Length: 249
DNA sequence: GCGACAG
DNA sequence: ATCTTGTCGC
Image (tube, rainbow, N blue to C red):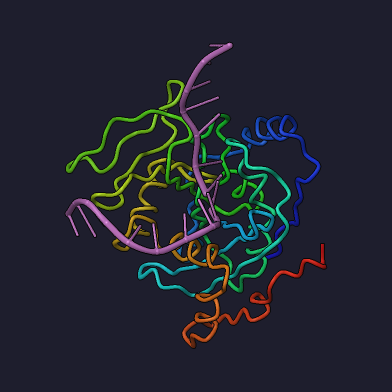
């Protein structure tokens, strides 16, 4: 599948907020019946003092969560970091990365929030809507909402905002900071939490996101080159390894 | 007006 | 997010 190329260079923060308000109405929290086998982890990192945005997509297969495909993409950073407008900064590069994948994911696990957002339209919602792939937001810290403290017995609790439940706060691993799970698109809060729990493998972050995180924050392409040599990985993204050429700007 | 504020 | 070595704790 081919995902659209996007660019928010000339979009003002005000217009970005207007778009979120409009697009948020198209988000569905109804679970899709389609079976989920391939889960893609999505994350973004930065190079050259933030001038270059580097997105990574790592695809794992259930139920073993083994890596089967991956891709990265780099492009000039074209939107500032503004809390609440993260998707406009990271989505363009993410779509490039998704276009470099060999397989089509059934589900997207995004590093960042879904509806646990001021306008219920975090990056997971935006990405899910643009790709029409079921998506879940997995935040490492809180953007909005309140919740009761987690304990040894309580490993999951509601995240509330403006009188409604917008997600769940979960203890993905003992002794670590909790994770904030919220629906992106085509999934309920309950199912989203279940999906995140079944994507864990002993670490704080879900396996798909762990891989994506390592690939996105690997400026020297150490891991990338190592993976390119793995015969188990059918995908050989050699062309994806080439460094971004500044002269192409 | 004063804080809070994903990555 | 990124810049960065050692270091406190399970």
